[in-house]
Length: 121
Image (cartoon, rainbow, N blue to C red; front, side):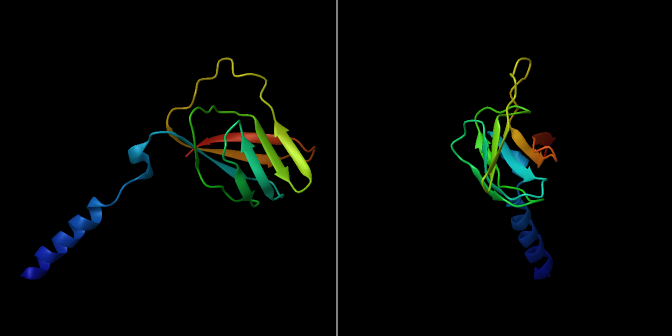
C-alpha cells in the first residue's frame, strides 16, 4: 500500500521541477544558424558585446540576450580570411522584437553575399 503513495510523491516532485524555456521570458534571445558550406569563425550581430564563435555548417550557435533586436540586423561574418557583411538600409517601420527566442539563419550565396532568414523559435 506504500507504493502508490511513494509513486505519487515521486511524480509530483519530478513534474514540479519541469519548466519550459518560454516560461520566464525577460529578454530577446537570438542564436545564429549557419546554412552555408563555410565555417563561421565569428558572427557579430549589431553592436552586441558577445560574438557567436565557430558556427559550423548546418549548426546553431548558443542563444545570446539582446536588449533590442529586429527581424533584420547589421551582421558581420568572418570565415577564414573572408568577411561578409549584411547591412540593412534602415529600420524605418520596423518594430523591436518582443521578448522571445529567435534564429537568424545565415547563408552565403554563390555571388558571395550574406543572406538572412528570420525565424521565430
